[in-house]
Image (cartoon, rainbow, N blue to C red):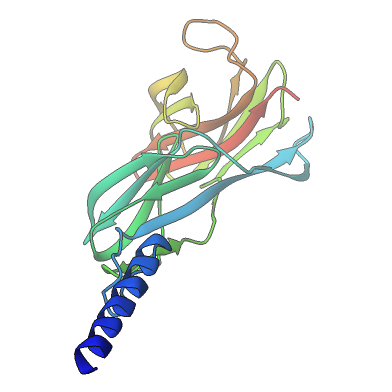
Length: 224
């Protein structure tokens, strides 16, 4: 009788394994296969709006900017980069500790927070990072249609380059390649034309003043 019992037990075990295979079951003791860690985040741009007299009237946000370069840094070294799509970016790095840097127009912004990933990390969701105007610039009216005025103040005399860039860091208009400016307040204008003297498309731009010791930019809108 014992051989018959053992045979039944063997057949029952084989049947259980076959059913498990059909159902897609796996051995619960086998280690789970983990994919590469994923880092995801998003950017927003924030601008100050002003009327024709230069009075602040509110703010405007570009919630899903395209084409902004995002760099992944490890120990201060750039190891990867990506362009935003609808404001979002994604990296799949090797395990390590990282920081992010964003570049829009000629400006770079680096996060102050470091984060670590290892082989067991799934998705790291980075808090949305807002990018705002930098430095002693004010532009009006913003938005504008035919003429934008921008004021800047220098604490000391220096050479200054003035220009307009799109969000992807491409220069749209060179207003001044680098003239000498004295101490005090100066105003320059942009008529909305590009370097080919063609109307720039409606949209968001960085108006920039740069020189020794400063690199300032303000986000402006051409069109409605």
